[in-house]
Length: 151
View 1 (tube, rainbow, N blue to C red):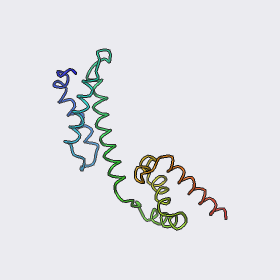
View 2: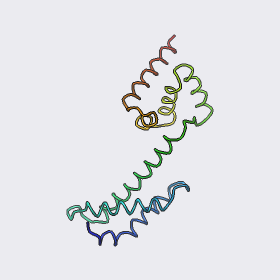
View 3: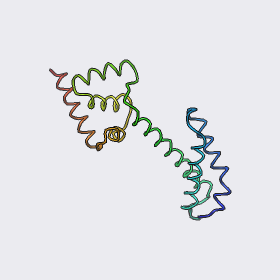
View 4: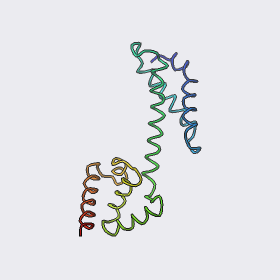
């Protein structure tokens, strides 16, 4: 690792964190972003080779990536750990209908995926099951709903 790069570009890493913070909600802590920027800077100094070109350009991708990965993990953990809540009245009505016809877990999965934009991985994590199992449950639920609508 080239410690000179880390010392030279610490202000650069901090400025990238500040630029990203400007586009985020107030509750996101700038110190967390700066810490992640520094980690990205150190990682880039460790992995940098002369053939990679300009260090500043190389480190930009690593610093920004470290910050965005942190934000993604933070977002996913807060969304997944929160209790499922429908976003508006239409979601509540849909949830109520689906729960009566399919069951709570199946209804939650359908709403989370189709109306709230959760990924299969997020849903799987919430219910401690595999992505494949989520697909199976949603497919079964979809077929059940099709049968009800056809009748």
